[in-house]
Amino acid sequence: MEDREEVYLNKRRKLAEELINSHYQYLSADIMRSAHTDVKLSDMQDVAYHDLSFHKTIWKASTQILPSLEVQVIVDAKNQCFVTTGSAGYVEFGMNPPVGCTLPIRCWIHTHPFGAAYFSGIDIKTVSTWVNLMETAYVLGGDGHYGFWEQGKPNELEITTSHKYFTTQEWEPRRNLEEEE
Image (cartoon, rainbow, N blue to C red; front, side, top):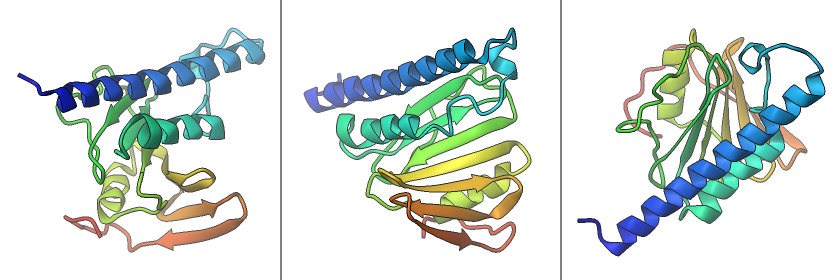
């Protein structure tokens, strides 16, 4: 039987996932309305995952709804959104796999709720492993602080701080790390 804290945390996880999914659906519907076309959502590019308001919602879920736990969002080839939550320093789909996810992944977004946008060793291993099946990725480290990765530059993360300062994190190709750095 679950204790009160676990029940409370599971309710918060569900609330965080629902908030992110509902914001994604809202942005997707808005894009479809303004597109004035009969193109299906699954065929559109750049649906909502590059939207900074969507990033703010993910950050809010990670740091305000949850007690500073990592959140992961995947947008698949059909623009379906899959969300999961993890611990303070790690997130995976694990026991809650993204059933129905279609490859390639258009975007992988995850948070570092401790407030640092960079790719850890595990993040580098993830993008290196998925490089041929993932188009873009973001790591969120706070409001206006994020890192952006794209398939065309597989060994670089462009980091933005407060929309003013840019830096690049680089790593050797196919770096094989087993632990967080």
